[in-house]
Length: 256
Ligand SMILES: NC(=O)c1ccc[n+]([C@@H]2O[C@H](COP(=O)([O-])OP(=O)(O)OC[C@H]3O[C@@H](n4cnc5c(N)ncnc54)[C@H](OP(=O)(O)O)[C@@H]3O)[C@@H](O)[C@H]2O)c1
Image (cartoon, rainbow, N blue to C red; front, side, top):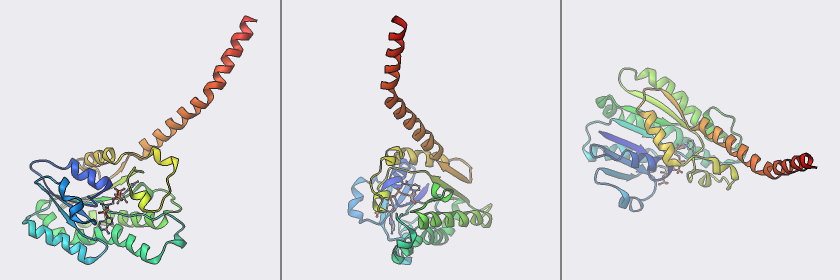
């Protein structure tokens, strides 16, 4: 089994490649950082390539690496690399918008096209990592949300173009505790304590990949239930002294 995971040097992608590490599986991890920072943690059947996927050169280098590895086919391609940016869209610099759209939209489209013959040979699967931001109003994340919505639109049509040849899946994770938010400029906020851990999100993604569902939301509902239950628990903690006092008061009233 031959697998490629982009954005595999950090966060969700790193956890995905750990979970996909099996004796009969060859995994090509793609990240932007230099190979020296990642190679030590690789097993014998994992390879790493440092490629800036915002450029055509970076996308091509992944395709060249597949040739270099002597792979005949690709069973699974996971487009996971992505970046965000926080702030009013009017303040987002042009070059940042360009970079975000290049990485979040152009790269997965272009890499899918480049690797299509390999994927078709294996009758493989292409997985696009979207975001729950696709379905929500996300002020301060407008361009990011637009980039993920664009990918969702592409996937909807690609699925029809490739039916009977490849499976195409879209997976939308909910908020996850990775470095992405800090890199995007989001300041530490108490709400982040409710975000899910990347390893458990990755486990759910692997489970989703093994299913035949075309579009899967990972963890959003659970995230909301967790938020609500934590808020309820906190409220109960605050109310405890009041409830205790009212119990004492009732006891005094009864005994008086
Ligand atoms: N975290 C969340 O709350 C959340 C929620 C929904 C969806 N998602 C989506 O999940 C995916 C993974 O996010 P994450 O939270 O795991 O982010 P992360 O921890 O910041 O990891 C991002 C990965 O993308 C790679 N990357 C960044 N720029 C790149 C470039 N120009 N070329 C190639 N690779 C590049 C990074 O490589 P280096 O580190 O080597 O630079 C890293 O491996 C993204 O598509 C994101 O939109 C995240």
